[in-house]
Length: 465
Image (tube, rainbow, N blue to C red; front, top):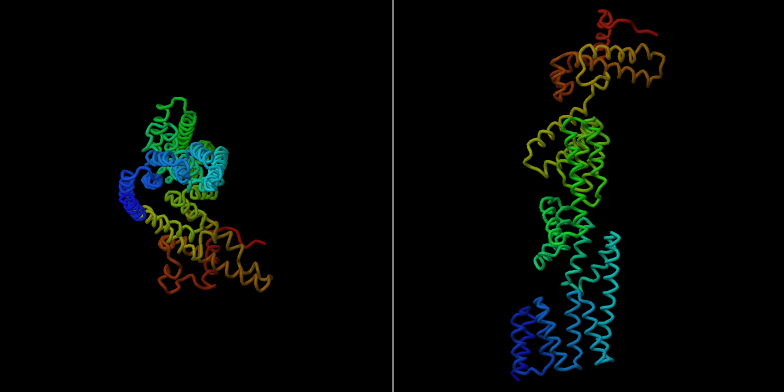
């Protein structure tokens, strides 16, 4: 009676999740009556919940010895081995069961499960070897519920996670594995690879070198270390060329680095951003923008790439999008004073872009000198003078008159130092003229400018034909 009470107590503690207490209660039941196989399998189940697999398998074996016809003892032993990924050992237990109990449907069903796991395992290993990480993930996920404590499956999962770019998850798994087996070169390699791809390069190299100390012939560790050193060399060469202004050579070095390891997204994101900087220095803003986009595909929150993308957009006069990008960068790096200044400048350029662009109207650069502006005014004024369009359609005459007025406004502002400074600071014409329209608002004003310039001889020539 005492043994039965201890068994019931163990069952209650097991249901409550108090597995240590359950082990103790089942142990007292066994001590009181060591001839009941079920007490051993119950304690085996509690040991499995505590991850004490040696003790769990020992109890299942004891149950088989006490009662060779007790199928549950074999099933428990097989599950204990299966949970650790020991498929061959689990199958051997069930083979023993079927020799003793050939008609056991539970044993047959468990054996079929193990064979299915074996097939999934082989398929997952094959797909990992082909770097087909997405499909490998499917089979690993199918195996995991049955083999959650299998070190080999955890290594395969880490390899798959690295292949799918989930580096932090891989780092966590390899940390757990190394806590159980600190000198394992395969685990050191996997953790080094996960750290390398997550951007922790110093720690990564230490792990790869530790793997090689434990196994000097570890091919994958040696090749990965060699590959990364070559990538670093190419990137460093690009940086050195960039510093001395050799942008084509810098771009070539960065391109070489990018072609070495497409899986190393953290490294490649940095190199794309560096190559963008070299292209920006060459004023190739459109292609630089493409490199910024590639960097952000690999690292969506990379502030430097966002900032450079915003600058490219500024130079391409995409001001609204530039402002949005600077705002995003500021949100990610709220203490960055330089970004805040750049955002302010972008907002100013956006405001300026919504006014008439006098530089574009006259087709001159923003740093154009007075004589450049006068020459440009001559060309534009002659092109759009209303007398040249007197035979045009009503729409053409209206367009010409508007263009002629704009040319006069542009000349009036850009040849007046004070007005030009205010214009460059972001003010529109109304603000520049003090809110009253000023002296360049009407058709007559612009015709006066035209006639005055030609009468003074300051422009030379005439209307022409």
